[in-house]
Length: 243
Image (cartoon, rainbow, N blue to C red):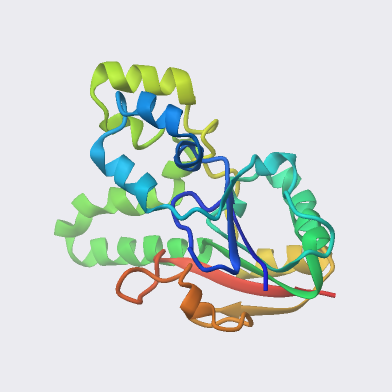
């Protein structure tokens, strides 16, 4: 079985069935020892720990240039918190590219921030604030969860750097959009199902973080945290098959 883990960032799997794909700076540094030596000047120990934990089964690739697999070559294509970073008018092209690399009957598993969940959390907190004004000081966080990544200009992790390192990192790596941190659209179970149907997928099913069409999914661990819970809270999990 071949499982393509697209846009993986640092959430990878060392399972022999998985190929982790991204253009993340972390994967680039994993593959290039000489660049790692240079990066030590700017990256703190925590960020290097993330690199050290990455497995060897990684492929550095820009997904805007297509998926680096042949036609009908993958049993599963998986991506978590990736689709919302793609320009809305290019999503259909991306879904078609996934279909290209999937084998007939192959599984496409998508994990995204659940816009319905986030909106419900926001509305519920408004009601809670009406009953208990002391909660007002927390309300900004619910707006942040909805729109912050849509309007972010600077990479979140760059802001944690000291001024000189922060400046150099932003010059070299670019702003939040260039690093694919910004959300270009948001989805719920209705819109995503509609898009998948239009793209020609079948057997579309809502899943949970620990349920899947994929055999032995929880052994692979891509949707699990270190304690066996959901790796990303407030996510929508959906799967579809290539006809």
